[in-house]
Length: 469
Image (cartoon, rainbow, N blue to C red; front, side, top):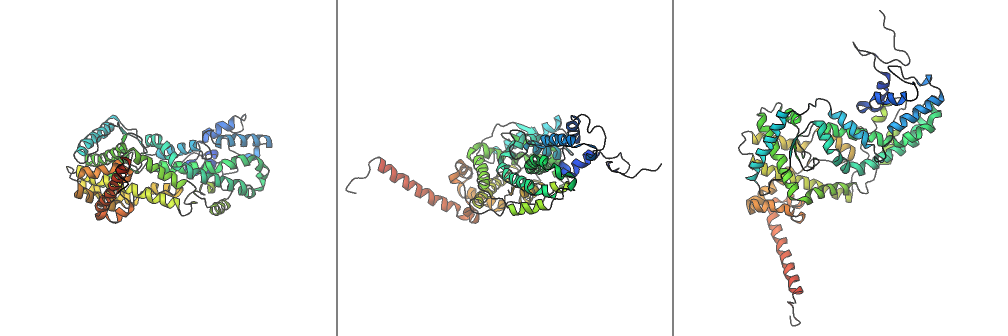
């Protein structure tokens, strides 16, 4: 039997498979791996009264202008933002993140959850012997990748929204102004109907790209605080499937890996619980970076000009591999420097404390080096996330920070080391990372000057000065 060649309106036939759904193919070409569910699109179109249904090919030439206009309105409604989303389609971002996380993502079973809980309980006991900060009392959870996405998405939104809004609005303006002139002649009469959709296209495309990056990040993170930010809220969280993949090839017992990662998670959360200002300052630095951020409109316009309207897949590639945020200057640079320093100080303290707490583990030294290399270089998803929003999550000066905390402990003791986290005014600076050995001397000199000023003020307020002095 001879297979007829593909004709207009017929889907391609994969080897040994059924013909591909034409509507699914169109969605795939437009949005790549983050395409909306074609069944949802089909149901919206079926509301027109049978315009598209079942496996019927999607052929606009079979529809009269009125049906085409109705179809575009339906499609526009589907692609538009929900009332609370604003310029960025966060609903689609969440869906894209869930879709990217849904690959090999088994549900966490009872046994795996118990292993995580036991590891975190043991980690808390060991940390009691290595630091002065008390246990948090936070619940322990074992999450799948999809659960990590669901429980952290709002934090990612708050971190990225200022940049995302600026980029999506700029992209939407460029698409609205330039794409209509690039449309093929046969649909040029529909430009008026396309304009509302084009206004939202930037937010839609950016939401899909950002969601995909967060979903891919869910395949790399090992715990709730693995990125350095407490995105999981007040929980001690591990992702068993990622922990297992992390251990592949390390030749280290799975139990030791789990305990070591639990130590790092519990140590970070002790910091955030003991010093509420720390979480506030981290997110404030991100917001300060985003405030007044300029967008490179010339690059965006150039990217949009490269879009081929006859090849919808090219639209979703506009954001891929492009960074439209210029090199930060002024306020943005200062915020990024402060963020980098704070993240390094957190990771350095965690490194020192966990090294002491993990002494009973035979593989502690090997695990420490593996984790520190991983944090210093970052994974593919972390780089993809950073290229979208211009935010690097890696603590570049991790080793200097670890050395600094070690110097502080050797000079002043563990209680002094951990007491530094009581106030942001006591936190070491980038200067201290450059010269760890001089931190204690500088801190004592500043403290002596502060005490002197306090004494002078107290004398003044108590009337300790007389006219003769």
